[in-house]
Amino acid sequence: MKRTLAITLLLLAACGGSDSKEKSVFELTNDPVSVRGWILDVRGAKRGETMEMEVARRAQLFASSSVWVEKSQYASGGIAENGAFVVLDVPAQTSTIGFNAPGAETAQIRMQNVPGNAEVWLPDVILENGGAKFLDPSKVIVRMASSDVDKVTPTGKFATINGIKVPIANVPYKELQDRREYPTPPGFSPVATVK
Image 1 (tube, rainbow, N blue to C red):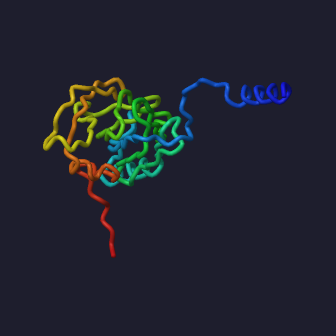
Image 2 (cartoon, one colour):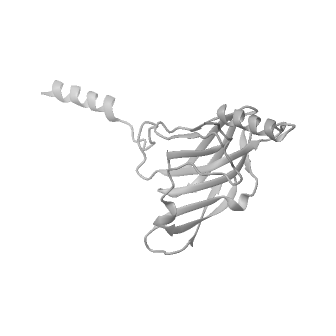
């Protein structure tokens, strides 16, 4: 009997002795965040000499770019031909969105204090190695769907996106119906195709 008890205690110690509450990258998040926006350009990129060359340069830039979420096995998303991106199932609170683009292979956007089930809106992103900037930081927003409001209502709380203090707002559900779709950057017009 003593021998069986000793073996059982040894097995329990070997299998479950950790008190660590750290989440695994293989766990799904219960309150995922969606991140949407568009890449404007890469810092320091040489622009095309004509409008046609610039359109071709940017199309090649976006086709050669990728996006991911650090330490998140299940986040998914991509970059469209117009530079728009959407990333779903991003962990709440603290996460880092990484971009790999020609000339900005280590670009990142760090997010802190983002509540679960929020949408983070990142328009006009300028990628650079080790970071990213926004053409107009005041357009970066964090929104939460709420059935208790009929218009945009500030919560009084803030998230931090790449060091920028961003107010969190409650919005009606109908305003977030497209949170899983690629946005359309302003001024984008697809290249004409001949049928």
